[in-house]
Image: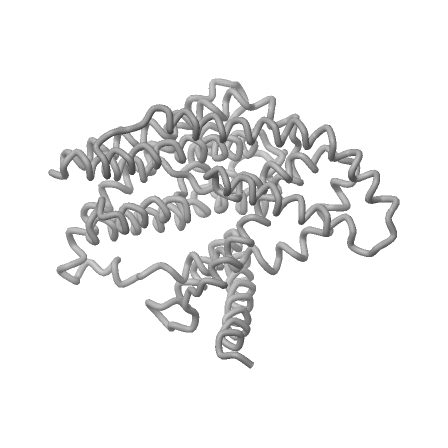
Length: 390
């Protein structure tokens, strides 16, 4: 057996067992299992026990887990319900981009950073990672609430806006100019992909499902549905969107078919294996040594991170208050937009590799990203427990 395969098999054993044990512990303590998975990831990660290291194949399996999570959330939702909250989702997404960007820029200017660094940091703070929020809503069986639909819809729109911002800021920093044609192309491609995939898919999916029901091969429904999810995820990635956007769109399309309930049941065992890999691996990337204030080198990093964390949370929380509809918990919506997760890490990583930010500022952004990722499950669950169940 090749050493790489042996390491992969052992890593998967450690990751999955860690996810289930720590997820069980978190649930017994009244928290979402995702909290346990993230904490378990920290413990087996490089900064503590060093039992697991991120390899290319583990990274790919983790991304597959994130894709399956959003696909499952999409299937358990309803396409037409999402269309009804579209205007609110757009307003939340727009505010969730503008406010963190402006606040992040102003804080960086106050701390003495130059305009280029301030612009990039502000852009990084606009990101929203829907994975954490979707998991908490799913764990609490709240995916059918209006708040969940607005947050998930806003996160998809946020990804489109974030894609444009990332392209524009990177181009501005590297060349000093921004191509409006390029921005218009990216925006048009993203909007066209989402609109056409939802429209065409909603028309064709019911006929495809009826055809599948006439076939006798075992697992035909889950296999074809999974393949459809992979196809839309691929197309989303090709045009520069996160693959999870394509997965979510695929789930929404299949949510209006007559096999929705059957598909939900068949998806659960697959998701139970792959989704925790994503969260455990995210936790394993956290370097807890950065949080030690007694190390002199960490103090300026932590000071910048603390300031940015406050505006990162405040900017997203305030975005929830753009929803004026009665009976909607605006604080839940704002809290749902808080986590930056892998999206924020991608932004920060691009800044470091392209020389836009230095290692110190990168470390501060990583702390902000991970802190928002960890506090959201606690914050969101506390708020949802106070709200009446649907």
